[in-house]
Image 1 (spheres, rainbow, N blue to C red):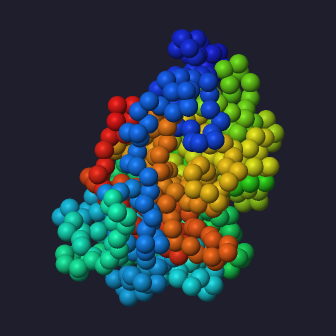
Image 2 (image 1 turned 60 degrees about the vertical axis):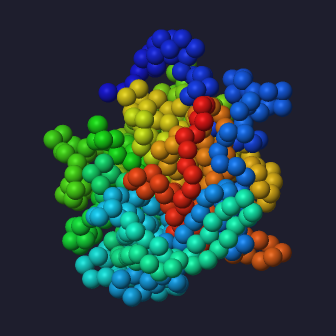
Image 3 (image 1 turned 90 degrees about the horizontal axis):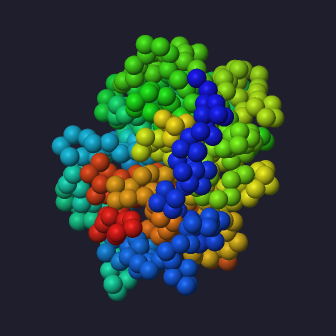
Length: 508
C-alpha cells in the first residue's frame, strides 16, 4: 500500500519539531567541511568544537614504517590474505580486487569471512582471477567471484604491524597457532562488489555489471545476485542467479528480517542509479538455499520514489543539503526486471522515480537500512562528497544522516570523502570505508555530528611524484566485536585490526 502524502504530512505534524528536520541526536555525522545543518553547531565551543572533543575516537593516526596501514596508538593489524602471496587450499594465489566482505561465526571459535573479488571482463585478461573449481562456476568466461576465509580463534601468523606511543613497529608472526584457510565459494561471476549478509547466515554477492552473453567476452548474462553459504560448501554447487532481484549494476543488498523485503542499491550513471525493494511472493519464507528456488519473476521488484513533507516529488537525493532531511518513500513497479532490451533504470521516465549517484554500501540495523551515496558531481543536481541515508522500514521514510561537503584538497590528510562500504559498529555509530580521491581512510561517524579517523592506507601504488592509494573495502567486525576486518582493494589485502575498542558517543 503506497504511503500517501497526507500520511507523511500528518506524521510530520505529530513529531512536533517535524521529521523534515530532526534533532541532533538523530544526526550521525558531518565531516570537516561538511554541509551542516544549524542544529549541529549547538553545544560546541567558540572554535566550533565540542567541549569533549578530546574523547572522540582513538587519537591521531601513527605512520607505519612498513608503509601499509596507519592506526591509532595501541592498535595493531595483521595481514590475513594478500594477492600474490597467500594461497588457497587448492594451491592458487588469493584472487585480486578484494571488495565487500561479511563475517560469520565458524566452528571452534573461528571467524568465516566471505570476500568478494571485483574482477570484471574475461578471465583470460585477469592476472589473479578467482580459480574455477568444478561445480562452482557460473560462467566459464568470467574472472570474478568470492572466496571464503577461515581465521582460527588461535591464529598467530601473517604480517604484523602495531602502534605504540613511540610510533609503529612491523614484523612477522611466529607461526604458532592454526593457519588461515581460504577456498572458493563461487567462481565465474563478474565484478563482484559490495553484496550483503542475510539473517540466516549466508552471503549475497552482487555483480556490478550489465554485461550480457556475447559482450565483453561473456558467455552468459551478468548483473545478478548469487547466494554463497560459508558454512556448507555443498550448498554452493551449481551456482544459480537470483533473477527475481533483477539484472542491473548491483552494488549492495540487505534483507529486512521482519518483513522479508530485500533492498538493493545500483551504482550507475547516465541516468543515475536507483534504490530497489523486492517483496517476496505470498507464502515464501526465507532460509538457506530458498532464494535459488524462486522463479525468475517471483515477488515484486520496485524502485523508490521520494517526496518531501509538502508532497513534492524529489527527483534526486542530492537535492537534500541538510542533515536531518526526511523524505517519504513510495515504491514503483519495475516493468522488465531482467532488462532484456533496456537497462532497468532507463525504463522510467522523468518524474517517475528518484535517482542518486553512486548508491553503494548498505547495512541493516536499527529497524532499517543505512544506504551510502558515495558522491555526486555534474551528473547530479547538487554536488557533494558523500552521504549516508537511513531508510526506516516501518515508517517508510528516508533520513539524511551523513553529508560530506566537496573535498577540495583530497591529496591532504584531513577531510573525509567518497564513503563506500559501511558497517554499524558494536561500539556506537558507523564505520565507513573511503573510495574517494587521494588519501584513503577508514573513519567513524557518531550520532552527534562528529567523525574520527580510524585507519589510513599508506600503500602507495603510484609513484613518488604522483602517489596513488587504493580504496578501502569490506569493512566488517568479527562476531565477537574484537576484530575489525577491512580490505585494501588493490593489489588485494585483507587486514585484521585489533586494539583498545571502547564505546563511542556523547558520553564516551
